[in-house]
Image (tube, rainbow, N blue to C red; front, side):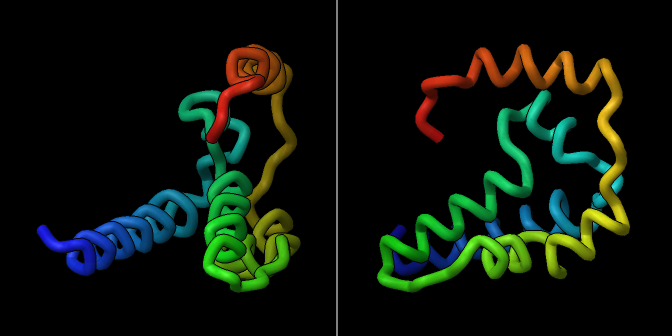
Length: 104
């Protein structure tokens, strides 16, 4: 497979991931994603912003989040984000401790 084809396939897979996990499934809370997978929508938007910077594209945090969330972050949180439970917070503390120092 040539590099251009691989890049197009990866881009399509990324767009599908964003659509599925980030936009079609808003009931899945970021804290649950962090606890189970070690990343969330905010992580993905930060990675997007960092990749843009590598390519010389300036993209602020709000713009990167809007790309991932499919709407402004404040709007998404008002519509979909719930208060984390004590169990979710405890699991997050454990997951965070395990991921400290990892390069993502």
